[in-house]
Length: 155
View: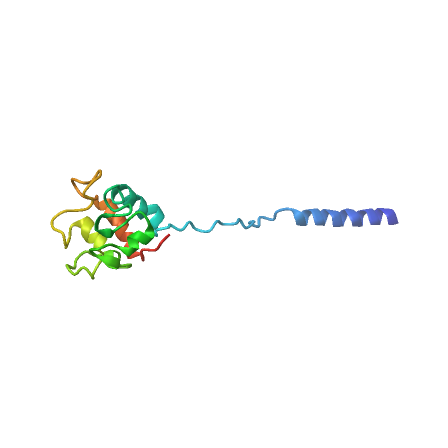
């Protein structure tokens, strides 16, 4: 009889242990991926430099040892240094405007590409290359302006 009681006792506890391990309808937490954050930042190397290399830093224009107006656009340092016309005011981090005729106000690169308050007359940059007849398209100018507005960082 003791064996039977011990057997029943063991079966009872094994049964309860097994029942306790079964899913009682409790939801198992699922790891949730963090939300995808849109990278709305503009980057020099990704967004601006390719435009300048393809349209401005061309042979005989804003490249090489004697770039036009002393404005070499082959590197970030060259772009930020500016040239004879606007100097360091060619890029005013945070200010992508072209509304002032004062060369010290606004970003000179925007004045030249938009032909707004262009100190050299009525034309839009670039003067050579695929956009020489129409000037740089607004979609590309907007990319440059966005980069300037976001601080014109070397990234």
